[in-house]
Amino acid sequence: MTEEQIVLWNKIRNFEIDDPTSSFTFTDRLARENNWTIEYAIKAVFEYKKFLFLILIADFPLTPSDQIDQVWHLHLLYTQSYWIDFCKNTIQKDIHHGPTKGAEQKPLFKDQYLKTLEFYESVFKKKPPKHIWVDVETRFKENHFTRVNRHKNWIFPKLLLKRS
Image (cartoon, rainbow, N blue to C red; front, side, top):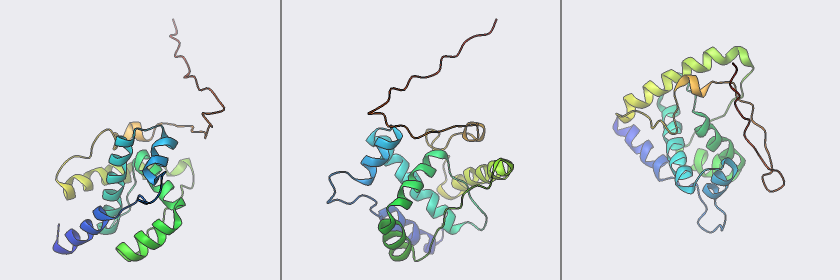
């Protein structure tokens, strides 16, 4: 990293996403909404910060892991924290999250994800943690997510039946 990049990385790394005066923090909500442990949510937030740093120093588009994307989506809902505290006051740049335009973009995002993993390794000098940055095939499997209130509904996994 260049000196300028080190300064930027330190700003991002030291950015406090949790409001210390809140009894239910960003990380608490992230963990609850994704059914993650607090420890996993903390790791996901740290990897999210790395991803944002990579976006700022890359000269090509990047694609996050699903876990990183979940952190990003939630952070965008915390508008004051994201747009003012982080973008305006910490990095002095807006980072927009663009939606996909459909399944026809899947090959593009697969390629960008592979490049993101390679770029991560070249910048941070280590492979991204596999429990947050999954392989490309796992990342882009067909997923059909639905928001479910687990206090009102039971959720049972579908049984995989073996065909004979």
